[in-house]
Image 1 (cartoon, rainbow, N blue to C red):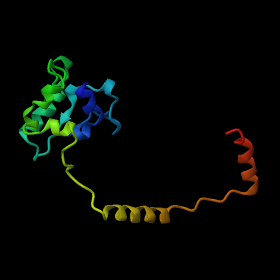
Image 2 (cartoon, helix red, strand yellow; image 1 turned 135 degrees about the horizontal axis):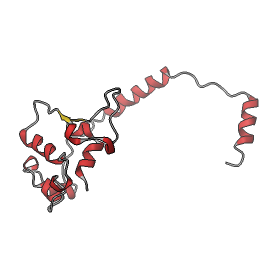
Image 3 (cartoon, rainbow, N blue to C red; image 1 turned 90 degrees about the vertical axis):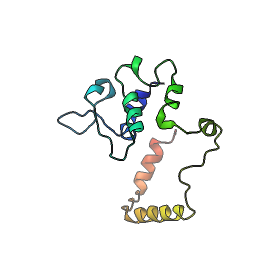
Image 4 (cartoon, rainbow, N blue to C red; image 1 turned 30 degrees about the vertical axis):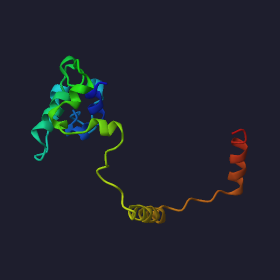
Length: 141
């Protein structure tokens, strides 16, 4: 797996501000990005180990990039940021999730959706002529 590509697709997850065109706020396509020009802004609470992991995953040359070396994914698993992480428990699905939804969470979301539905404009009713036209056009579907 090319870990740089993974983080290129999800730059926000890595704390990376992707390269941008000067005249727009849209990120450049990955093929046009020069990773040397990426401005990596680490949050102040990010540990040095996390910064090192991100920097090594964002190495421009694949031959030097963490995860692309001889050890592949095991190099990433052995990085100091993952120190103490139980990879076997993860593979066996024995890890506890960091957040378990509360029983009331679904009720809150249901109320939000109901409120959005009330705010939605009413869908216009089709006239009999429009219904006949649709039936004619889509009779083979």
